[in-house]
Amino acid sequence: MQPNRAQATRLHISLLAGSLLMVAPFLWMISASLQTLAEVEAFPPVWIPGVPQWQNYITSLVEYQTARALVNSTVVTLVSVAGQLLICSLSAYAFSRLRFRGRDQFFLLYLATMMIPHYVTIIPLYTLVWSAGLIDTYAALIVPGLFSPFGTFLLRQFFNQIPISLDEATLIDGGSHWQIFWYVILPLARPGLGALGIFSFLGIWNTLFWPVLVINSKELFTLPLALAMAQGQFVSLINVQMAGAVIACVPVIVMFLLLQRQFIESLALSGMKG
Amino acid sequence: MSTSVQTKADTPFVSLEKPRRRPLGSRTFVVALMFLAPSLIGLFGLQLVPIGTALVLGVSEWNIIDPMQFVGLKNFRDVLTDSTFVKSLYNTFYLTFGLEVLNTVLGLLVALLLRHALRFIGLYRTIYILPLITTWAAVAIAWRYMYSLQGPINDLLMVVGVDPVPWLSRPEWAMPAVIITITWKTLAWKTIILLAGLQSIPAEYYEASSIDGASNRRQFFTITLPLLSPALFFALIIGIINTLQLFDPIYIMTQGGPADATRTLSYYIYSRGFESLRMGYAAALSWVLFAIIFAITGVQWLLQKRWVFYQ
Image (cartoon, rainbow over all chains, first blue to last red):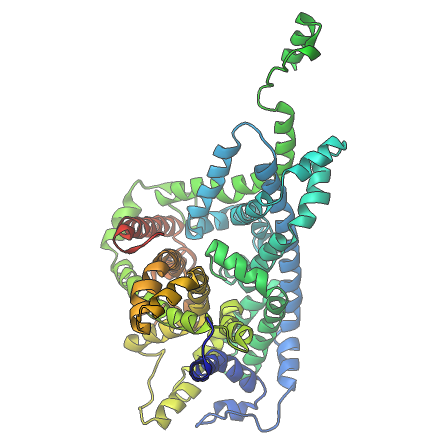
């Protein structure tokens, strides 16, 4: 809707006020991450650090092992997202393009598993991982992120929008289903892959619950887990903790800015929370 | 295979006849199986087996170390007399209700602002989404310190003449504090859903009613709200499902305390399973949570006829 000038001014004022509320915690986080210990503990609180204490970031990265956690999070997230994109697009291709007996019933079963809240499956999953002796391994962090009924569902929706005549043309030219998948469907479904990619990137990067359960050693901490544990162990060093928090937020914000449009579309399409 | 061989033998001029339909693509079935194989493994190992295990665990007692013991419905009977469960159920409803009210009202407000074709509107949208995408662990720690007695929030309160509030250390304040933080974090989700709903309302409706002299207020109640009701309904259903499963903010900010004031059902499942190692009881609790989610969603589904307006 096109507002007139007076309305536009009022809207800008309201939106600016709201924006301030939304970014204030981030600003505080950044400010606190650059303060001395005396400043973060001062009352009344210091809003703007005197001399920016960049070494808080070094302390966080080295002594708090945030650097290690950053590497762990990056590896776990990239492997999971890449694997999930491949596995989901393979199954989405079967559901969207192949006609086989029981396809629709099977797809329904797939969707039904989405209805089961992960709280029901997470305790058994933990016991399975425990029985398999995989507690405290990268595999425990990565494998559950590789599969996603939701991802299959989302990609199937995107694949269904690609005209089937393209498949037929490839088949007539002697192409195989694998070729259709790789050279026709995947390139045309790039927006869908981007949507699922950003969606699962955020989900896996940010996840805390599962790592809390399956990881014990510091060497395997992901960023959220490292932050949570640092909070418990070094209660006093707020400034260093805030530096770690900033380090955890920067990659997701960068990824988000790159794939913003796809993210919003996937959110509106799926109704799941980031 | 056998069918095609027979056909060849019986009818030499097979090419002139209409081809018999093959039993729904047996070759395609093999191809499909190859495409589906990795997902099948995942579906089986990460969904079906855990669901089956959850059923077994629900009627067992198991501390992970000793052998599992079948106890029948004991876990579910225990749930009924478990006062912490009752408390956590109350907390869950408190949290869900407070969050839905705040998120819906504020989310609608922000969506109404963001629907306008303004300069910088893209920038505003990005800013409002930032909390939603960032790491819960990171922002929850920040909020925890912001809530401290000497923190910035109490400092601002004192500027306007309000005494400092012990946000996270008093049972009566902890839940409101958690609700405020979660609202800040998840507001954009509601906003995006409602904004998508708003943008699907045809502009002609507003133009026509303006010509007829309808006020903004009247337009809101007779055009916007009814046409937005499907989006509101959707956001309510999914929002509640998500809230019922929240873990991160509680874990970081309060650990369920003080005095169980923020121990929600999902957090209680975690504490029973992984702090007191009662896997069976935790599994039973998770089925109770599932039943609650199912019941709430079902009731909403039935009630939608009364207020959701589909064009």
